[in-house]
Structure formats: C-alpha cells, structure tokens
Length: 145
Image (cartoon, rainbow, N blue to C red; front, side, top):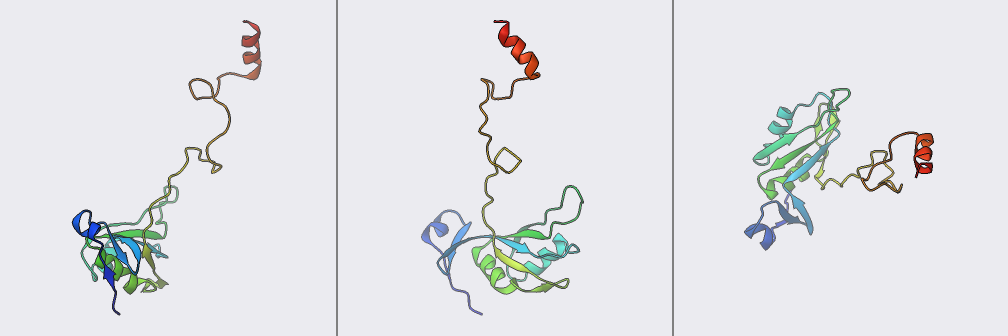
C-alpha cells in the first residue's frame, strides 16, 4: 500500500509536528482505540515501532477503578511514520480486538463548571463567589444598615 505524503514548506522549515496527508493536516501523534484491558504500553511501543521510531506511548488509567480506559496515544518522531501507522494498524487485531487507529485531535478545553452545563450564569459578588451564610442571616445583615 502506497501512502502519499506531501509535507508542507512550513512543516519542513519550522515545526516537525504537522504534515499534510491526502490534503488533511496530520500530526505525529495517533489515537489508538478499542484496546483490550490486557494491553500494556510496552506492547503498543513494540507494535508501533514496526513503522517508525516511537517517541512516546501513553495509555491512561481510570482513577476510580485503576483499570486501563481502553485507548491510548502513540507519538512518533516523524509525520511519515504516523501516517503509515494509521494506514497499517487501523483494523489490526490485538488481543482479540480490532484496533482503531486515527489522527489524534487536540483536546477540547473544558469549562470550569464540572456539571457539564457550561459556565454558570448566576451573578457573583465582587470576589466572584457565593455569599456565605444562610438566607436568614443575610436578610438580617441587610436590615441592619
């Protein structure tokens, strides 16, 4: 299978983090999904080093259960190796599961409100926090003026 890689002038002269693959900008980091919980970072490193030099491998764990989360990231030193890994290992069987290998996307910025509803629209005081105390004590303070 032939992979056509067109490296842009900006990627050649400046940063080696991005290139163009079939008109799409790719980076040196790939996402590896559908991993078995038995897969280790060393196994991913060994597997992906077949297509190029691996700069780093990360497979995050769940903080509560301590088990792997079923996905990981592999970073290559060259864009060509990343594109080759996507072409070669997407659908590749590992521990009885077919890997999903694709370009890693930038993580979206999370809001500070962890309820998932976005930033709160409640008006805040001058310090930016809710007033302390019960409503009864706040009403008493207002009457005391």
